[in-house]
Image (cartoon, rainbow, N blue to C red):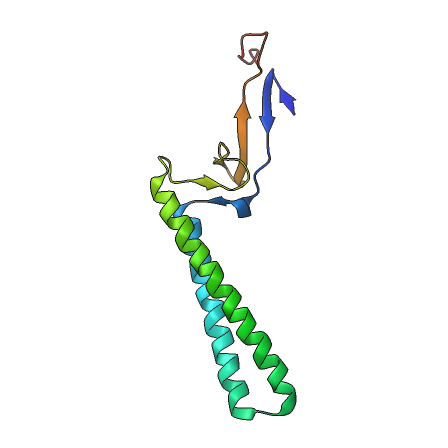
Length: 124
């Protein structure tokens, strides 16, 4: 998309851009889900009818998946420490989260045109 001789490339989704705060929040969500599934497993273990066996296996698979996600978040947290601005984009390494007043965050990369023009926006 071109705006005032500037090229904007929005390729990064919110779910593929990480900051320490986002990692913390996601790990809290994962931990809450694990606790919820463990409680459901505990309840299923007490009742133990035959149809609960399949549900128990699904819950164990979900817990395993969530623990893998938690490990992934730990890895991302370590990578964040190496970044000068504490951001990582999995889509585009140059993309950064940019705060916009009242609209949350947009993710993208600002690119300058490669030729012609001053690169400055015309006066309003």
